[in-house]
Length: 225
Image 1: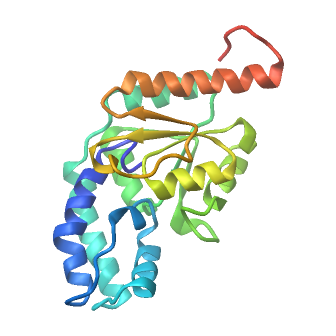
Image 2 (image 1 turned 30 degrees about the vertical axis):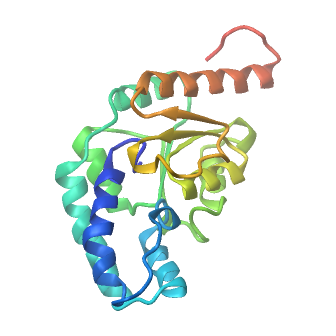
């Protein structure tokens, strides 16, 4: 969802740099590169910071900071990637099952779905998965399985280094979205990288990858799906 479906990463990065991390980290502590935590479930972000940095707040306070920020970001500020809602609807109408696999918790996701009248065949938040979230692949593996698919016939779209790693490690064909907020991020594990400023190119990359998968399974050489 974040950074792919909606432009929330732009807001999250500003909030983390300017508001959240200065309050969470002890004075004089090193500051993490945001690539270290972007794409992770926010409960796991605290665990990561507590292990690798010096924190000055407990986990409950940390979670509250993220929840207060999320209310503003998702409820008022984010916008959809141009054409994203129509594209998801077109895929589903064509018989392609589509899941929203996110490190955001379900209530944040539901805010976005309600605001923009979006529907998916499956919503898979990291907080509801019994295992480590991104960059580990389990969340993707479970979502693909729950859709009734297999990883060799799945396409994942991601924008964070952690998300790209999770998707690629699962075995799904992985498309990374490059934008200003991740211009220096290592997206090399992805099978291809598409610029977010060109939504049409992103959608065509998804269509082409699904056609390629269908052709490889069926043995056909013509266009399908």
